[in-house]
Every structure is written in structure tokens, then in C-alpha cells.
Amino acid sequence: MNLQIELKSGVMTALIGGELDHHTAGHLREQIDSTAEKVRPKLLRMDFTDVPFMDSSGIGLILGRVRKLSGWGGRVALAGLSPQLRKMAELSGIASLAVIEKKGKEA
Image 1 (cartoon, rainbow, N blue to C red):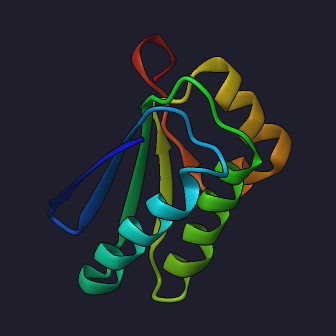
Image 2: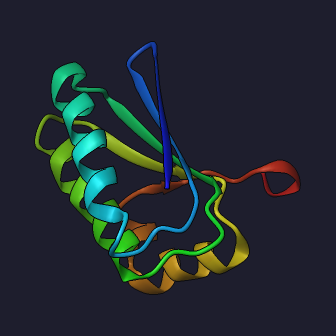
């Protein structure tokens, strides 16, 4: 699992790479939360472009960040979702809690 965090103009972008499952979700949560608690971004963009697989632990990771950011008036956006991950987000209800950014021809 790979994570790169970028900060720019009140936006924190978490570029996630690799499979997101119960083995990797905890480490990602710790890293994202550590930075988010310091900078208190208005927007946390989680970029899943390089995530080929995600299980329910990924859903939990997203929901936890939605809850954390809403505590200080922030919000979460999901970017780079594959069709499979987009469907998972819609079926789980995440689509109603976080902004799902469209890419390319969808935008």
C-alpha cells in the first residue's frame, strides 16, 4: 500500500495506491488522520486512481474520514474511482455522504 499526501489551498489530497483491505486500511487511517488533524482541511480528496481492489475496510476508511471532517465543517471527495469502486460507493451509501468527482468524459 502506498500513500502520498498533498496539501494545497485548504485541500488535502490523499493519493492511495495498491490494494485497500483490512491489512492496509489501519495504516492509511493513521497517516491520513495524523495530517488531517494538524491542518484541518476544508476538503479531503481521496484519490483511488491506483487502487485496483477495495473491500469493506475501504468503505470504513472513507466513512470514518467523512465523520472526522464533518466534525470541523470539512467534507470528503472521492476521485479516480474505477467502475467497480464507484458501484461499491453507490451501493454502500457513501455517494450520499461524500462528493464523487467525475473524470474525463463523465465530467
